[in-house]
Length: 301
Length: 265
Image (tube, rainbow over all chains, first blue to last red; front, side, top):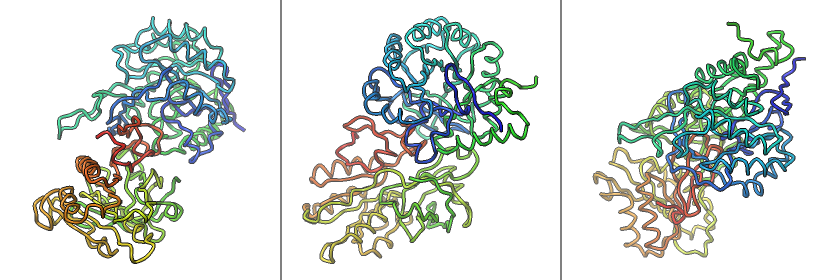
């Protein structure tokens, strides 16, 4: 028997496959047994309801998906009343993604409110959504990253994961700040700021002009960042960016990811995560590795 | 909604850039209703990367027929698929047309299709004809719009169902010269306007916007089937929204059929 168990902060996951924020909803239960997953991360919740950005919000690019949803969500109160109760019935560890548009204090309030709910396993701090009107993202500033994580850290005892932006000159600097502020883990990477153009009407394909790029198009960049950060920090990394099959997930693990996030792929093949879990297991058996943790960061360089 | 590997039974060119294919999707065909759609992964690789949404054109036994226009890379690849090949299909998806209009409401159903927008209307017409309580009730009247005579779709199929069919072409090469919405106005003025009890429409967005105006002017409720680029098609990503009086709504999950009065055009 091989062990797929990994630890992210206080969380013990039965396998390293996590459904990433913005691509998980309870409706996926019609396609797969959610209880077989390592963990799930909700769509980002903000304190107040957010209408989101005007359409068009998505477009396909070469091996990728460009999106500008704009954190559409019903806000904390409605989330707690209408969505959380059924999420709590899941036996899979539940990670709530939290974010804010302009008020850093809101993150602390969100963390405090969620601290009281026993079934919530962890928080993912979305300080890297590229589709907000802020000129600079929290995770594009290492001092601000430190300050925000530190404050939220004081508000929660739950596993705290910081999701970082790849749109920076040196990802390791930001990752180090997050570790120093006592984040339990890092999610790497959020989408890459990008755009697409329609030459027929000479308009951008997204209403917000720019958006976040995800999918296989960004995988090499994500791998590079996971590898760089793995050299610099000791906290676990959840690697993500264009994972479409088990092979991709294993690449992230070799580069230093303790767990992997499946995002865009869920939108195309809603049952794919289970295939990936199986594929990772098969790889361990074939490679005669008994514990997946032995594989983490084992890239031969 | 389920995910299945569907066998392509046939895939044939109808005319110009229009194709019709049939997928063997037994499990899915039973629960499908007009206005719903399928999300099809056209090819296994990354081109095209996302699934593509297609309206259900009609049911033929255990097959679902799709009528499509080749407009980009995805549909071009689809048009070259051969019978016997398998496609990964999710469906049936979305909320379809409301067929439960009591017969105490007088008048006929008017179906208005522009271009490839006729695709979901054939399935709708079939159900409307089938649902008639007696021969006394008239079948739906179908207004089909096209750029020209050569682009006209489904005229015979609707006639075979016993529908009254009226045609408009932009260049006047067949039927009424002008937009199908102008034909609708003429139709409503000529016949007693109270004869319409429901307008069902599908086509380009400007046409549907005009349908909303006509619906209000003649006090006939209207439902439109929206076409939109989608990422997931199953309500997860919040990518395909339309602005409504109750905020942004997902075309894939809350629609694709909406009452015209709900939408902020």
